[in-house]
Structure formats: structure tokens, C-alpha cells
Amino acid sequence: MPRINNPKPPKRAPKIDVRRGAKKKPCSFCQHGVDRVDYKDQAQLRKYISDRGKIRGRKVSGNCQQHQRDVSDAIKTARELALLPYTQRTVTERRGGRGREGREGREGREGRDDRGPRTPRPSRESVETPAPSPVLEGALIEDASVAAATLEAAVAEGTGE
Image 1 (cartoon, rainbow, N blue to C red):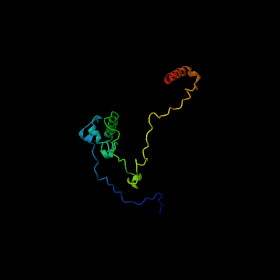
Image 2: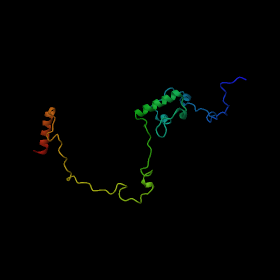
Image 3: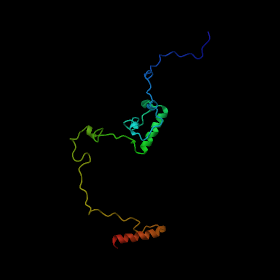
Image 4: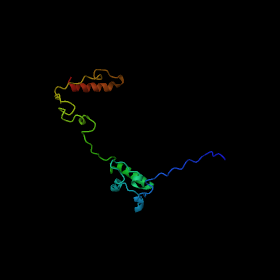
């Protein structure tokens, strides 16, 4: 009996494809005979943007390859012209999450959140003048002698000397 070099693998049960029986969603542009996608039609383009602002894929939107490309180009153009937003606004809460409030709550703290009590601001009269810069003290570059002379003259006029 001859020997078989490549034995056939045992037959497995066919995989059940859930989508196989489902019908593909038809392209709405092809159905209505639309040849161009208008970037100014915001209502239509919003159908192809998710709630987070991402462009929906072909499998989700049901567009054919050419119209999906046209839709994505139109959305990108509308975004650049500020007709559509790049991202949608999401409402987030300021408090909560993984911070200390989850464990302790608000009752255990005093003052202004976790920053401590507020200290008084210094008055405007008590503001100290900054230390003179080395440029004013005479540490000038030789090539910039004209600029240094005008700067010293301006400083002398400003201080009243």
C-alpha cells in the first residue's frame, strides 16, 4: 500500500457565521442616485459621525466604497471650514472618579477643597522691585554699543536721574 505524503486533515464542522444570513445594508447614496456628496449638507453628514465625533466605518454606515470615501472627504472639508466640529462636547463631572472623595467624602475636609485655607494676598504697595539685570549694570556686548547707549538713556529717564 503506497504511503501518502500529505495526509488530509480531518474535516471540521463548518463555522457558523452570524452575519452570513443577514443582508448587507444598502448604500443610501446609490439607492437615491446621488452622484456627489455635498460638504455643506450638515444634516446628512451628521448621520455618518458618531456621538464622539468619529467618522463611522463602511460596515456600520452601509455605504459602498466610493461613497464612503466621498463622505469622509466631505466631513473633513466641513470640519476644516468649521461647519462640523472635530469632536462632540461631552459633559463630564468635576467631582468623583478615583480621587479621595470616593473614600472619605466631603465631610472630613475643611476650608477650600484639599488646597488648605486661603492666605491673604500681598498689597500692591509692598511689592518689591526686582533686582537690576546685568544689562543695566554695564555688562554689555561691545557690538551692541548703540543699543546699550539708548537703553541706558531710557533707564536714566525712567528713574529720574
